[in-house]
Length: 403
Ligand SMILES: Nc1ncnc2c1ncn2[C@@H]1O[C@H](COP(=O)(O)OP(=O)(O)O)[C@@H](O)[C@H]1O
Ligand SMILES: [Mg+2]
Image (cartoon, rainbow, N blue to C red; front, side, top):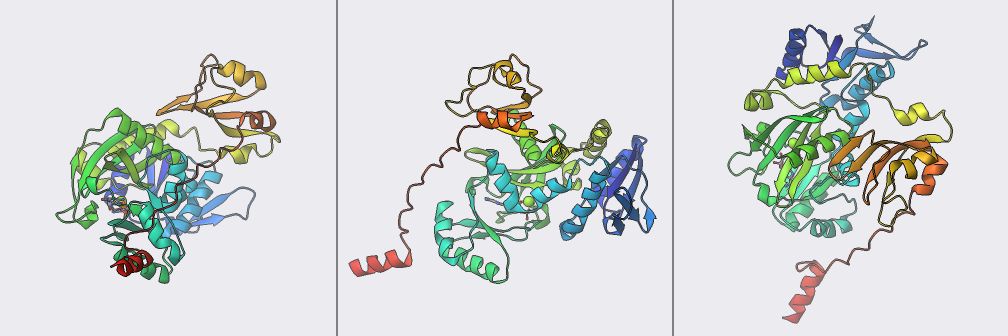
């Protein structure tokens, strides 16, 4: 196998370890500076140049794309994908995880628990948004921050409002998020490789710091996770489209909540804390997958008119409940590719499996047949109207008048 690590920091711990692990396994490996790769769309086939020369025939790449070059890095990764080079981290998956809002929109859609979050633009919507996520103290986050920079804990609504206004005036987009106080400056970082959690550590913020980032002076210790939390982390990585990921979770009263998913997780902290050969696990995984480059299925299927992939949700009262896959789907020329049931992912489910309410099925078939099985759009439940805020300027006026 011939592997390229895309990195602008050949001497960084993570890059060195990946190269070392590859060499230990007799994998031919090179480090390519992402910014020296040129995308070439002039010939018959998608191609690339490296430092002006045609790029070698790699079987796989490991993108280590830093936040500062996300756009160019993603284009380069996408080009390798077009050349059918295997990557555990696709350009789409990088895009999903880089933008915190996009990430949690995706996670929320897939029923992955996250801290309550809102995103607003208009001044008038800020205070109600803060209340919706539980009131102050409240977390304010820049959409593309990293290393704890751009995460603020606002102690009260006035400060929160002022911070949000200031950031917005400099054209920064911010998220407003419930402060998970019980996590007490700690979080859990897991590394997911393929369909396993291969390492986990707890990060503990330094005294008086709510952020647990090591770059903010936090410390680490290994942690043993229960099966549920491990499955949760794997499901999170897969939802983002990542096969190698750092999944960060807060330990809330309601169980684990995803805070962030990293598409190029650093290895130094976690290998140091756990004494595990994570770089080696990543290389082993890539070797096992190299023959299966990631396909954009919808794109490939675009030419088989009328057929495609769709997700069927078996809602309450759906006609498929208590039917076998054979009776419910196969007879309609629909193939169930994967069944999602609660925490469980069942690939290639058997024909005699009986469907249950709340199952989700990834299917391939004729759109016209599948459409008939999708229930009418569920009505969104109405929210109760928010109560007036006690120290709302208007409400306050009333109180003063009352006195
Ligand atoms: N909603 C929250 N409640 C409590 N602590 C949080 C919350 N969001 C973030 N933190 C703390 O702040 C740190 C940085 O936040 P994170 O979203 O991971 O940003 P970054 O990308 O800068 O690391 C986290 O590691 C965690 O310790
Ligand atoms: Mg973080």
